Image (cartoon, rainbow, N blue to C red; front, side, top):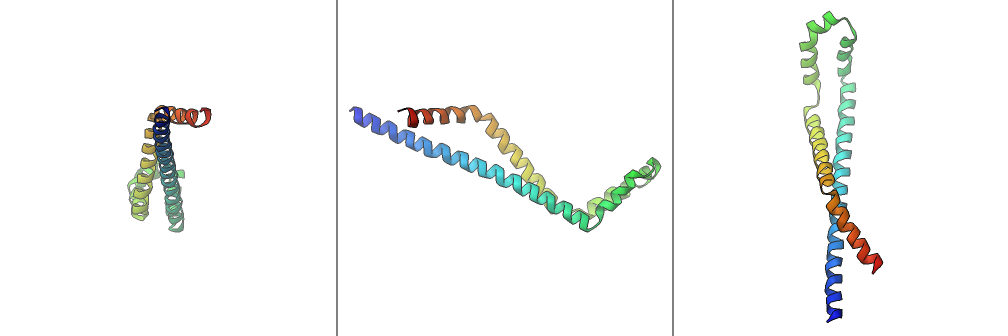
Length: 126
């Protein structure tokens, strides 16, 4: 009977180990991919704005305060017309998703840490 109990417990721990490792790998890959995607889209946005010379309009802000007050609406309108909206939306989505995943992982960190510790104790102490 003892052998059967050990075999069942070992099977349960094997299943839990596989499940925890799979969850950690999937979460880590999701955070890395969304982070890299957001950064890559940010770089593409900046390159496109530099290519279109949109940042030249922002040089107006180094001028007199009166000029800024007179032309702020036109500068903002020009900036938004020339900005790559789809890439900006995708970049914001990627960064929000990354933040959400990191927040959820940090909230569940103690539970995951306890599971990993118990699995380590079972596999390496026994």
